[in-house]
Image (cartoon, rainbow, N blue to C red; front, side, top):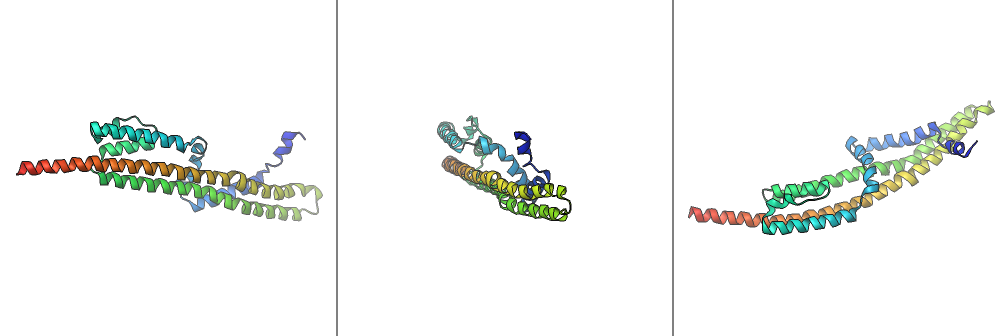
Length: 228
């Protein structure tokens, strides 16, 4: 048996199905369908995400927004070129905001929604990490039962014994080398991402209060002077 064949013996289909399939089913049962989809979709940003670069881009965008708002008004903020869907949405909401409080409510709701979505995705992978060893043990027990049932035929013992041993190994690998590290990295990325997004929205909210409150106050004074 060649080297490739030796490695392929570890990919026992029954053990893989019981461990990976069982852990995934438990994880899907504990989270919503949307959170499970978000957990799988997070595998892309897991590698590409760079919160520090995103935070730097946000700081530069906020500086440009503050500069143009001081000269032309906050309604022109949407003309600022931004990178990333979050920043583009925040700038559009800022330009269209009727008042500072409506923008502040949008900011809080947006961050709360993103935090819940992140938590659901992290919980999915944490559940797989917690469940995989148990699923491995269940598969091991099933393999041993099959092995003991075939003791009269020595040639039939090998396959269930392999399933029993490989299932435990696959459970440990899935928990400690796959799902666990994914959950930990997603948690770190979530903390970093939500931090710079909160900082950005707080800055934009202060800018909205300064610009929109002043504009509304000026409008009220003009209206009072006209009425008088």
